[in-house]
Image (cartoon, rainbow, N blue to C red; front, top):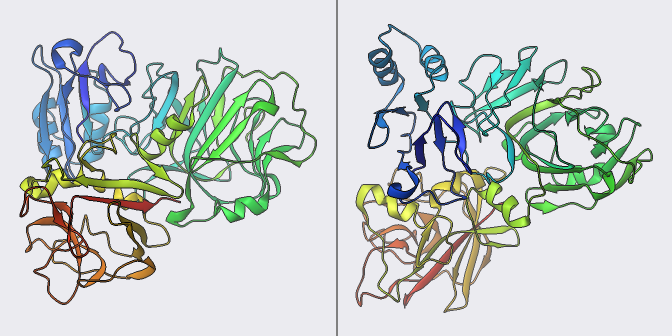
Length: 487
């Protein structure tokens, strides 16, 4: 999905900021251009880049680099330089207020009362080198990387900062600390350690004493969740499944604090020591990620991809928005990633590599044509996707897992690692979802054998027969939903 971009040397509200560019994230509508001054950006291509250069009218000039060599060529043309590495290019754009480069668009988030936003997945926040982590909020409270934390880009996130658990931390020396309630949001992987601090103010922090996790007030205490829950949630480890989304709500009294993990509110209690739940606490004018202000100790052994701070509580809807990247529909452990209702004649187009079937009406899961299939990869757990296809009018549901991602497959068809979980029907060769581009009537289908020319269980169907139905498990249907397990 393209992101809205505006150049303004002053300030904008409800937007992220990089130099003099302001970037919408989907939480607040930025159209139409004639009213807001925002223009549609272009999503960077896989392994490529989008370059924005301010011009006086009609929005920014936008150029696409399909790979590193093209980025170097375009950067040298713009800057009049002779760079030979992409790091030199990244550093050049980071120093410009009227130009920027993106390899990945910034992650969508709620912008209301956002006071800090560090996002290592995008070059405009961290250019993959250096000791500055740039704040994308309007406050520009940049972080300083102390003792050389390292940047990595493997696995689930295209960028994250590794803290070694010895002496690495990130120092934020000045920020908006005027409120009495703050929410710390982190996408983090807790690699190891039984006495680590995720982050900390002065004598007020997130500590992991004895494998428990929660709020510490400098009294050898933890008010939070027990080590058994930490284990149940799989919080500690080095695999891709050990990345988790944390919400830590700090208030001036610990008794009102909250913790959410992967969108679910946790039950908090005293785990270590005796936390004073009613004593008034304040927030220092500086804080640290990976330790606390009191000393460079209790260092976090783990990875941080995204760190945000809000000067308010977040509602469940806002937490879900930040976790999923848009407004979604959730049913227990599953999130809806596709819906097609063709009773009004709504079908998908195969143009541009089925792009419409991969992303349509994001943020509106009740739309006749709704798809966020392009986000499927991030829901891979334990090396597999657990999926649920549902036909509301037939009262038929199949739940299964498979190891391949059909959305990003090469289009030759087939399913790997299929495991049935709860199957209502196996008619017409059911065996999971495949992408077989030689059969061009639907984006994905579930007829795995014996005839690849058939396309029952259609996901992303073009117009067919009556103009109001498409192939279901056997007979024609006008509605289908696809869900994926996210935790």
